[in-house]
Amino acid sequence: MIDLLAIQSGDSVLEVGTGLGYQAAVLAQLARRVWSVEIVEEFAEAAKSRLQEIGLTNVVIRVGDGSRGWPEHAPFDKILVTAAARQVPDRLVEQLKSGGRMVIPIGPAEAQQLTLIRKNSAGQLELRDVLPVRFTQLEQDNRGLL
Image 1 (tube, rainbow, N blue to C red):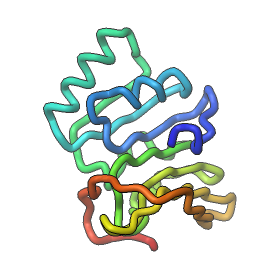
Image 2: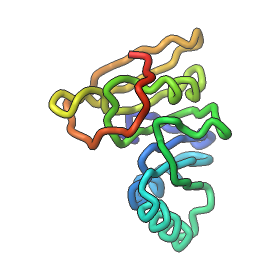
Image 3: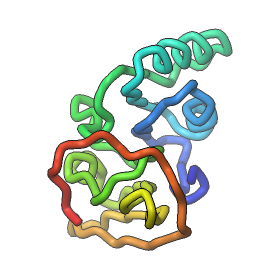
Image 4: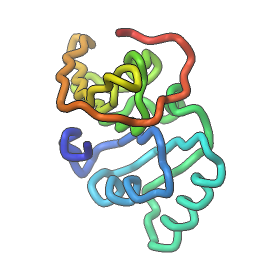
């Protein structure tokens, strides 16, 4: 998933689904700044402690609904979502820079596809299914683009 993002050293990345922080730590080694949202408070706190322990200072974690993104720090060059959405969350698309990339599992539990989304300079989305996957469902409101 990280490879599909094609992260550059100057990128600002939004991660939706911090978990215990492993992927955030990898992202922090590749990008300028990582903003990570986790819905489970205990996971977020554990991840914060781990990342602080290993000295990663370019990751900020907060507890919240990741389907809403982190508008205060948008737009993002890259967005990585580690929970499946039935449709592309419009709030995340709004927070993706033109020329940016998002990787997200899309579809119902029985038919999810890991999807690479590119936002072109005109703001239009280009989607490419990468492979079938099975992720936990993203908690989100019913707004979406696709």
